[in-house]
Image 1 (cartoon, rainbow, N blue to C red):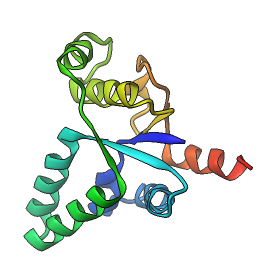
Image 2: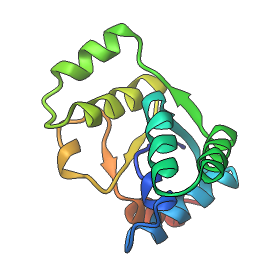
Image 3: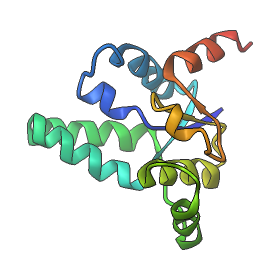
Image 4: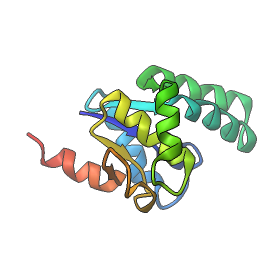
Amino acid sequence: MKVTVDVLLDVFQKRQPHQVASSQVLHLIATGMLEAVIPSHGITTLYYLVRKHATKSDAESALDKILTHFAIGNPDPAGWHRARVLAMPDFEDAVVAVTAECTGSAYVVTRNLDDFANSPIPAISPADLLVLMASMP
């Protein structure tokens, strides 16, 4: 199953209590149990925030881990226009949703379920994804 991930900062910034389930999702990705996509704009955001709150080495290490285990999703110009007009409260979330759509993801993995109510791809929390994965043969 392919998912678009919107919980990386929970892991890299050790946001409690969310880090545990999000880390477990990343473990499933790193071990090949899940195929994962990160929106292209998320790479620069991750680098910037890790670098701001830690060291350059930490930011580079985070980036290397993501580039090793994630596909990079980037909507074409039509996708960016679609994101702009989606009935979603946050443009960045709309871009994540369109990225999930254009990459064939089954879910957007996020804690921000309410903001993804109008997403073309269903949103699922990290904890719920873990339950779903455990129930699959």
